[in-house]
Length: 338
Image (tube, rainbow, N blue to C red; front, top):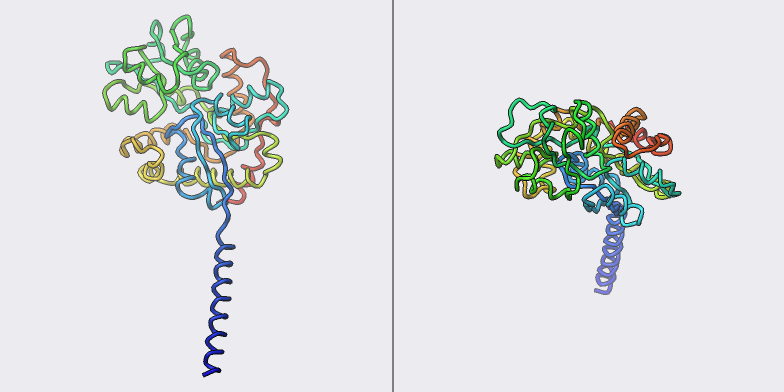
């Protein structure tokens, strides 16, 4: 009896040890995720590869937990970054150029590009036919924020077609990004430059008609990219690398996946949108080659952006590419991920 009791105690102790070891092993095998505060400029289907990377778990695979907030403007996204409210910003690279030219010591550096064209579309009144950019002469366009890439690109395209903003066409630039579609529906302007899904939603409501892709007509330009402060990059190179790896995985996945699959993946970010509408928009972006195939930002691409900024009167001098862009993380991601 005494022997049986001793055996039972020994078995119980051994069982406890096994349970403890298993629990510790399970705890070690589960990767601790690093939380990253990511501030995006606006919420748009145009950024589908980023949302896909989040939803498909590519950031988690890289050990990152993304907390996404929306700045509603590149200036606000940059403010969140430099004030420490965000670890990484996602907006037009023009924001990084403005900060650099203010001669700030801890300026923002681009490390991954996501889109390579303007993602907005020109929407006309429903009755518009046979659109040409010259049709905008004598008319009014609701544009974007002065100094922002959407507005500068719109003005660049107009000038390329011999239409001078402020002389041949009035461009409204004092409305909030979120108010432009409502103003157009309310009767303001003859045209409005809109991102998706807003442009297609207006068309679906028969409140407007998409007549041109601004991105297709402006050519390749580094439209939106990820950036962080120089100090954050120096202190956290592995985090920046892991982040870039996840972005590249998202780019590859969106490239090879049909629009229907991409729409399902990003639907949680657009809960009020119709899935069929998302499919339409994704196909539209694929058709104009809006998304980068990898995260590298080329020097020619940055110079094209600076040319647009200079023509818009928003840039006095070109910035040094090597100061503004660090492609080492993108290059490493391309080597590692197939």
